[in-house]
Image (cartoon, rainbow, N blue to C red; front, side):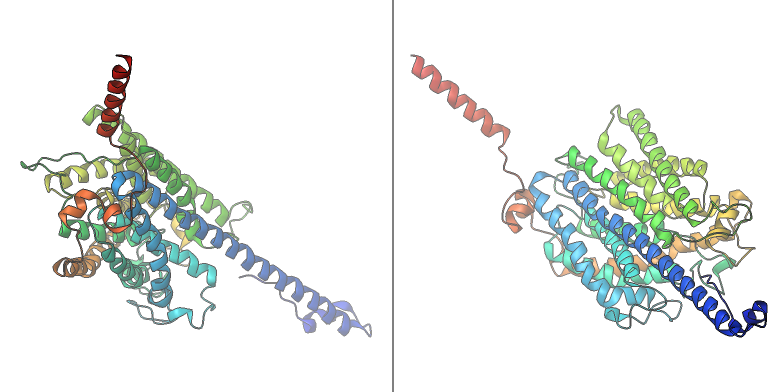
Amino acid sequence: MATFTCSAADLRPLLGTAANATAAAEYICNGFGAVSDKLVAATYAIDNTYLLFSAYLVFSMQIGFAMLCAGSVRAKNTMNIMLTNVLDAATGGLSYYLFGFALAYGSPSNGFIGKHFFGLEDFPSPSGDYSYFLYQWSFAIAAAGITSGSIAERTQFVAYLIYSFFLTGLVYPIVSHWFWSADGWASAAREDNLLFGTGVIDFAGSGVVHMVGGIAGLWGAWIEGPRMGRFDSDGKPVPVRGHSGTLVVLGTFLLWFGWYGFNPGSFLTILKTYGQTGSSFYGQWSAIGRTAVTTTIAGSSAALTTLFGKRLLTGHWNVTDVCNGLLGGFAAITGGCSVVDPWAAIICGFVASWVLIGFNKVAEKLKYDDPLEAAQLHGGCGAWGIIFTGLFAKKDYVNEIYPGKPGRPHGLFMGGGGRLLGAHLIQILVVTGWVSATMGPLFLVLHKLGLLRISPDEEMAGIDVTSHGGLAYEFHDDNDKTMKTSITMTNMDTSTV
């Protein structure tokens, strides 16, 4: 960080031979020192305030996840899915405080795992303040929230607690260390020995967050199997509609709002110039604005592509499909949001929509059931976002955000060669392998111990009734209403006679 410097010994000769020249030089330099200290403190305050605000936005995504999940399941399981979203945040808060943050960012460390700041011991430090911990925690619980959607409506409550603690305390933090810590073996912020001379540019986490949550959910949903009635006796898919399109739309807008903390907030600081001559108006604040724009464009492109694509395929204008398409576009642009032009974001969203539609078709063929389409959306579109960045990352933006390496490779289609894309293909492989090797066995052990799936009777009745003390809503079955109307009409006829 640049500061004012002043030396009384250097300044004194400029003040002449006056008797008080030494005192005047010291006075002036002390004034410069005080101003410099204030500017440094103001810079830290502005940057930390920006990061805290971004953390609050990302945390607001938990509300979005809760509403989206609630609207996407049947009414009889609403209390269950809402509670799991609350406990993702609470359980993740403790596990990330005790272990996760240290494993992710406990520097100095090796390239594979952090080893300092357990329980935030010796923290804050020169590497980060409390706002940094809060921001990274909000990312960790977002990954856990993705997984909860995949296994909704048929999972025992204790399984949620176990997987959430394990995912936020161990699985996710190690992935984030690899790609985001300055010590990580594949990090683009690493000072030396960069993977393929570039490292992985996964700016806000298409792989680190979305693929981790999506692949974890894939294994959970695959091991416990589809919901009862999701496929008929011939194996054909039977639609199981969520109970509230209103909640789905509300959740989607809340997630959209929170994404402006997720992607632009990943800059971590805002008060930074890029040093272009004659461009004092242009700095990190400009890159942050561009990142918000690319995020918006990708989501919008994916939403409209899904709208017309599903209309051609099914003949309907379906709001739930459009919402999922929109979120797929956001998941895809998250990795390269800061290093691509807005026009490229249109391509990102367009392809993400078809990736989601395609993976949903594959899921039906394989009799895979994911009530939120979370594995397809976050895992599939997240993987596309990693590839997209390797193709479209722009040289100027890469050098702004990752300075100090003028010859750093950039996107293949932007004239940067294939090394960045190669690093990103490695990221897809290692994230898939690590999450599969950790979360797969965890879900399998829970299944073997009888702790994963609820009984058929509980599933038919609904988890709210069997595990949470009652339904989220007081409602009456249509048959009950018809019967009451019939009885009332009969009584009226009798009284008339």
